Image 1: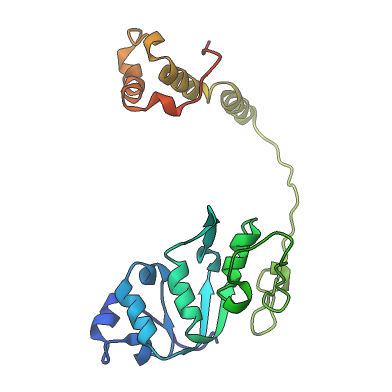
Image 2 (image 1 turned 180 degrees about the vertical axis):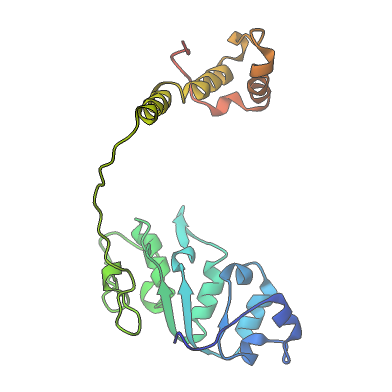
Length: 232
């Protein structure tokens, strides 16, 4: 398949299509799903096109849907994905993260592959989500090129010892000390000031504290949790 030419669908291709529908003109196309999810005209062209032999979706976990308050919430990407699933003989969903930790959302994702089997609300203990006939899981060590070479070369991790000059050692110690003790002090002061703006004295150095004062006057103080300690 790597030698097959593909064309990337663009607005210019849409405008110059002989039939008005490049999905019917071209044998192989690459389409950004966001492009289809934002355009009802694009979705109408997909729906009007002849059925496809194969649709491959990379980063397929973006075709997400979820349950909220007993109701299914579909993302904009899910809907054109479901449309493509209904118009192809073969659908390949490629993702490294198909499961977000919620079985009901995973079931909605699998409904793209088999709507009859996975449609409907998921109920714990009533129906187990079995994917042995639908999913193939590979770790990177099991991935190969077409000529049988491994896709990822073997990684060898080891620690290299090296000497550091006294000046660099002093710099490292100083930066480490700053990160551990000083780096978060400005953030702590800002949060405390947002919580208790009347207790902040800006007269000490108005130039340095002006940005802090600006944030205090514009940020909603109720968005911050109550603090029990003041900065030293």
